[in-house]
Picture 1 (cartoon, rainbow, N blue to C red):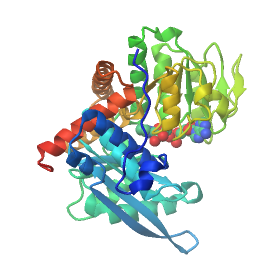
Picture 2: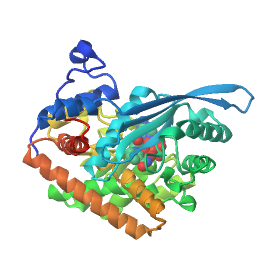
Picture 3: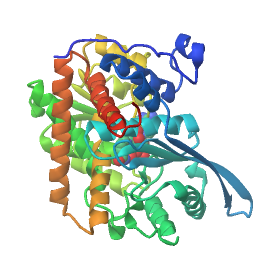
Picture 4: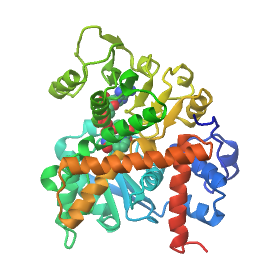
Amino acid sequence: MLSVERMTTAGPSPRGGLAGRLMPPQTLWDNVLATLDDVARRLQLDPDVLAVLREPERELVVNIPVTMSDGRVEVFRGFRVQHSSARGPCKGGIRYHPDVDLDEVRALAALMTWKCAVVGIPYGGAKGGVSCDPAHLTEHEIRSLTRRFVGMIMPVIGPNRDIPAPDVNTNPQVMAWMADEAAAMPGRSSIGIVTGKPVSLGGSLGRREATGLGVAIATRELLHRRGQPLEDTTVAIQGYGNVGMAAATFLHQMGCPIVAVSDISGALYAAGGLDIPTINRHVQAHPRFLLEGYDQPGLERLSNDDLLTCQTDVLIPAALERQIRADNALAIRARVVVEAANGPTTPEADAILNERGVVVVPDILANAGGVVVSYFEWVQNLHGLFWNEAEVNRNLEHIMTSGFDRVWRFSGENAVTLRTGANMLAVKRVADAVRDRGMVR
Ligand code: NAD
C-alpha cells in the first residue's frame, strides 16, 4: 500500500506573481503549474529547466470566419498550443466546445507532454480547440469551420512537427476533413498529418476502443497488485461514450461485475452485475446512443450524483473534468478510482481521497491508451504499414503494462501516490530531453 501524502499548493507563478502564491489554484492551468512546481521540488529540478517547462513553446490563436447556413458570417476563435517538443513531434487532440479558451488548451497541452512521457512514446505535447457549440451547428457548418481552421493552423502542424487527433466533440469524420484539406495544399498530402482517422483513410484498427482498453488494463494491473480477484471486484463507470463503453466491455470480459453505469440520461445500478453485452446493443440502437430506456431484472435507477457514491470497489469516471470534488469526495465508497476522463478529480478532492487511503490511478497513465494507438496509427502511416487488430492490441498491452509497472515501482520506492509518481517520472523524462538538447546549460 502506498503512503498517504497531500498535494501541495501553488508555488510562485510568473503569470500570477504574488497573487499566484497566495491564492488557491483557480484554473486547470493553475493546477498544472502547481503540480509541476511540486514535482520540480521533489526532483530538485534545475530552475532553468523548470522555467522552460512552465511556458508552452508556441501558442497560435486564430479567428475563423465561417459562412453560416443562413448566409451570416460568424467568426470563431481557435487555438493550437504546443507545450513541448523536447521528446519528439507534438501530439494532442482538437476539442470543439463553448468553454474552450487559451488557458484550458495550454493546460491540456502540458498534460499531453506528461502523458506521452509517462508511457515512453516519442512525442511532445500539444492541444487545440475551437470555442463553439457543435450542438447548435449544422454538419455543413462544422465541415466549413474544420476546413478553415486546419488551413489557418497549417503553418505549425505536420507529420513531423505536430499531429492533431480527435478530442471532445471531434471524431474520425472531423479528422478525415482535416486530412483532406491538408492534402489539397501543395506538398502537404501526407496522411500522417492527423490521427484518429476512419480506417478507410489510414486510421488504425483498434483506435476507437484503445482508451477504454488501456483503462481496463490499468485497472487489472492495479487489482493484481492488491491481490484482488477480478471476479470479486465490482466496478461503477460514469459516462458511457467512447471510453466508458469500451472500458465496461473489456472489464466485463476480464470477469469484473459492472454494477453501475451512467450517461447524460441517468444512471443504472444492479448489485449482481449489469448485462453489458445487452446494454451495448441497446445503446448502439438508441438514436442518441444513450442508456435511456434500458431494463433488466433487478435494475435500480440512480441519479448521476448517486453513481459516484454507490457501493462499488472501483469507480471509473469516464465523462468530464472536475466530477470528484471536495463536496463529494468524502462520500465516495470505492477504494480505487481509475481516471479514464482527463482531470476528473480536483486537487482538493485528490487530497481527501489520499487521506482516506483511496488509491487513484491518474489520468495521464490510465487513459494513455488512446494516444498510444494514435502513435501506432502515425507509425503505420509513415511506413505504409497496416497492422491487424491483434497486433495493435498486443503492442498496446505491452506499453500499458510496462508503463503501469514503472509508475507502481517508482511510487512505492519513493513513498508517493501513483499520481505524484507518474508526474515525477514524466517530468524527469522531459527535463532530461530539455537538458540533452542543450536548451539549458
Ligand atoms: P464521449 O462524448 O464519447 O462520452 C462522454 C460520455 O459521458 C457520454 O456517455 C455522456 O452522455 C456522458 N456524460 C456527460 N456528462 C455526464 C454526467 N454529468 N454524468 C454522467 N455521464 C455524463 O467522450 P469520450 O471520448 O468517451 O471521452 C470521455 C472522457 O475521456 C473525456 O474527459 C476525454 O477527454 C477523455 N479521454 C478520451 C479519450 C478518447 O480516446 N476518446 C482519450 C483520453 C481521454
